[in-house]
Amino acid sequence: MGLTIGEGQDGAPLRWGRWDGRALVVDRFDDEDRVLVAVSPSGKRLLTVTHDQDTLAVHRVTDCSVEVELGATVLPPHPGAEPEDDEAEVFFDYEGGFIDEATALVGTVESDEEFGPGRHWLVDTTRLRLQGEVVYPRDVPGMPNALGDGTWYTVSATENALHVWALQGLRLPMADARTP
Image (cartoon, rainbow, N blue to C red; front, side, top):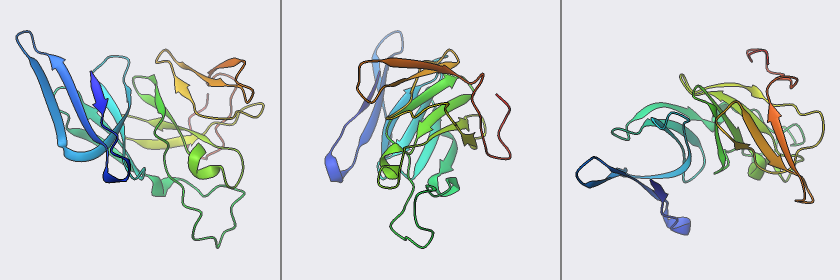
């Protein structure tokens, strides 16, 4: 079981507990402020974002060590932001998840909201490399919720419909993105 302890501006320590066959073991993440975003479909890896939302990390469940990290500096500014706007910082949301064992879907909805629609990003979790922005055939408000089976869902703006998505048929405009 994973637990992020929200302490507001003071931080967000993360604990990972498991039964080892004889006792409950609770690991600390070296008192780093990490927010648990998701557990991989295999249950062997965790996706976290730092409390200040500037770094994603994939951890091994066995010892909580970081396998790979990705800084938000790789994210392009929102297209609606003025190029010279120093306040237009892009950062990761606290929500997202694993589409499959090797791919995560994360958002920048919170940092994008001032400039236009929020964006969702595919991330290769083996090397933690940005694969590209997901371009939907219609407006998609809010956060992505990965299901671990190759799909994810979003909730409509009126919150009365769920939309389930898969990579097939969606575009990834970045040059180094994989073809869906």
